[in-house]
Image (cartoon, rainbow over all chains, first blue to last red; front, side, top):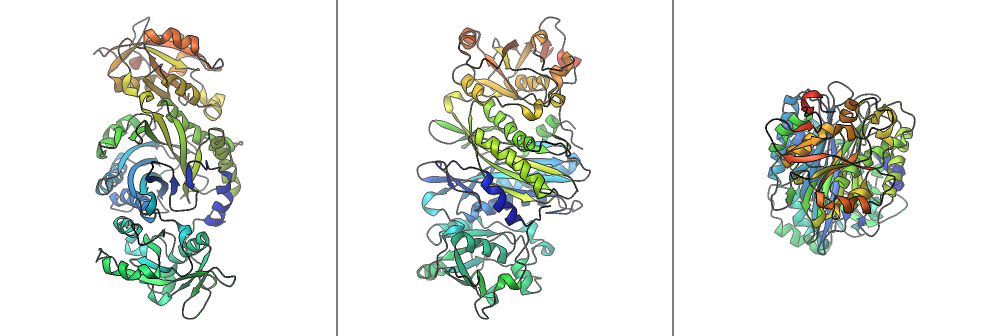
Length: 303
Length: 303
């Protein structure tokens, strides 16, 4: 079973308190009632040996850093700012290993001003395995919160950075979450944003499904990360941790003029349009149904 | 290395934002700035196959329920009320297994009015392993927050329920977290409370260390759970998930008179006193140094 199918079955088990939960499970973060001007954001992500990194890798500090950065990327996608985290680990590892990983996490937390304020340690049932889980609390001005469900027909699809080859290039460990970029974008330029973690095409499909729109994707414009060998890799490799977002055509000029991050490329990748029965994502030029042409991305499999 | 020693080394890596973090790591929950009248509580706990339950156990719904209840017990210990949770799982299990576990979690969440509003699924590197992690957000009236550090010499030590034999009796799966009891106690009867999860003696040691006090423990008064075979078991078996708390002698009578939970026994187990160099916990009658006499409890071992 694919991860999305799993979630479609499991999420309905859980009843949300509608008086407190503003946005249900399914976005990059849950959006919760908080103060009069702000929402609370709440999310969790994992880093597991043999899945998200090789147990025998050298620079273990990167494992701890990745754990936090994955979560910060989720906060960034909502236009928010991270505040607090708690971390759990189930491991059968030496203290020396865990110390390196936690030092990496602590250094990264300091950089982003996140207080890692609690957690839990447990053993693990098998030798040489580690499962880290981190949960993050953030906040966002109510007027700035960005949702997957807010893309509208006619909006332009924009993306930061480049896609593909994250694993072999080491990007999956060394990426810088687009936190400042997300906060900038949420402050007037977009209401619809998400983090690309499971491959551009799959996350675009989720974006379109949440907003009930279709998308014409200009595949020729998708920027390739160094070492990306073909379009398929750019569209379907995981762990890019870039932002994709919807921009009104009337805001485009101002966005491009005022973009204050010269090292982070912005690219217009397509146009959202009314949902239609023929395709969710088509190639802007050839009209090809892209979700038929490609296995859309990386999903954990259940069972 | 023992878990407490591990934490003593690792916790200082993490810098807390003093303007927002009211109580540092080390209590049952982190205590965070929130609204003018309330603190936010934030905690995380795990349930791991082969550690916290047997992979081949029958009633898998209990695994999901336990995951939430462990966390609710942490909120209860602060005098708080749980609100939101996110859950992660790293597993190589069938959908059918996970469905049962998540249904158990969902049912328990509904019972306690907790919105499980997000999470993450990942594969696992080994067959037949599961690691669940749940993080919980709660809130507590500022005037009611209970801390491990608040026991004072002369306070009486009280406990709910009974101790020992949690694992073989199934209590570790079937316990009811003392949430209503914690809220009642925090509303005027105690400022110092904690959850007993790693054995009474070890958690009492942590209580004394956090409050910088010593304790005379009336070992003859410690209630034994059904099937508990000796005092050692009552003092050192884990997963009781009872509350221990400090009561001013002047409040004792009112507490016993107004206690509204007839099915939950309250027992006075000892007296806190000034910290002294001879012992942290001694037997009230014999004067024996109890931390020398017993291996104080269950701790996960690192390395």
